[in-house]
Image (tube, rainbow over all chains, first blue to last red; front, side, top):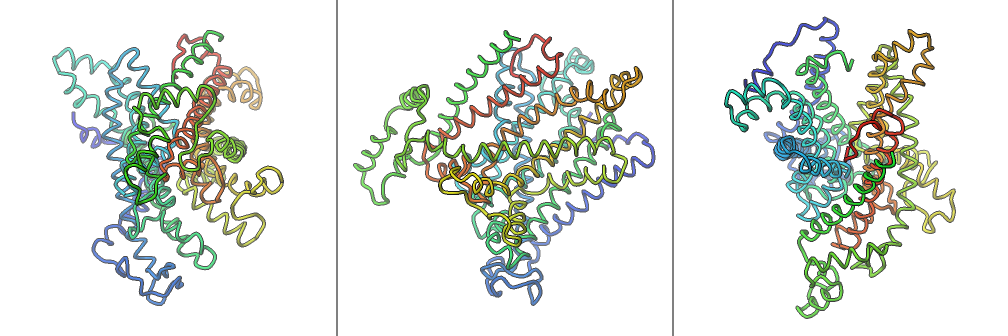
Length: 290
Length: 321
């Protein structure tokens, strides 16, 4: 069985009203995320102004050639928001990839470990999880330099502890199932059992968690940039835009509001997708979280 | 319980020692010799060597570690490379801001989230129940620093009710001023924290509301209130307590962003400066104190859980979980 088999499995017939509300969650999530994604995609093809074009008046209001106005250096706000959307998606996808790669590997290994090794690994993960993502990220960024790459690596590594702990629990549960014993007694090797039976069965829960981690990663990158530890200028991350606009909040509110609104839309969007996916992918959990 | 307490304390001590070893090794992997922070740009090799000797970074790592750990054991966090001031008193001064900030935000978040989460679960089919869930969804997605910026713009810059940032120079000497400067940061952290707490309280309450024991208690004639108080509260609080422990620990350290928004001299900003200046004793000191706090909070959360839930006490395991 491959992961796609599981995904393509027809959903159980749920009662009409409930299933419609659930799919509404998923659709709304996709629409919100899609809108921000559209900004990012369009930014590769067309931008209102060049990102470092400072020809606009300083802190100009919306309108007059600049749809959303300009920042304190005269750069077009919409242009900055669009390039910021790229960074947000890059940060989210990059961090989640790192978290998934490291977290799943560690989690599967921890699940197979026995006795003191298992105890040590899970205690280690517990301690790691207790430390805020942002703090671990600050350390990694300090060790390397303040670039988008270090921020992504840092956030991904910090999140991999959460993923690893989840995977460990999920794999342990799957390993007690009869079909694993059946696969093993029929001569399937451990690596093939993991690839063919364990991973496909933990896949739904894992995907939901990774979607949530995506939202958290976007927020963490914005926080790092706000602290000046993210991508250096002129790469306009939304966090940096907010930090730059903080001093002029009352005189030019657009610059201090727009990046925040986009951040919220994107994070709510992926959270709704996660909620919707949980209901679609995990029929057993249906009815528990309504 | 006594036996468990001993094992758990031993675990605490071992993790603290392990964590400090990991911490020390990780920090030495940062590039750049800390002596660079002490010398000017054009310093010659002799000056750098002298600087390295003065702070001990020329000695082998194990020796540096035993030196640092020996100091720790006697309650000394070392001396800052940059300011040459002892780290311990500096950390204590910062804790005077961060601890009240964190605790007040924590208490406020619980006061908001527990009733709100209960209402969101109990009245989930009404419009205000749905609204509460919606608001908490929104709250999870709001970056904490942006919320801080908005609160400053509304309540400090526009209305002028509260200071927009900073903390009195003489600390708590004038308590009213100190409290006024902490109001907005506390509210900021509490709102964001309660948004995620509401979800946990809501789902824990839903589990209780759908449980057999609650139905049995009701069938035996207990009123809803009594049944909830005697059976529901205990059961619902077990998962919430462990979440609370993690939230408290992460707020204590994660306050760095909020401290930056409000220009507060807290533990987080001390760490941030330490990192940019490669000031190892400061970074080590802050992280050691934080690790201690994180482990202690985890210990207390475990202990409270066992007091609340007798089922945990009868289990023989006394390990990490």
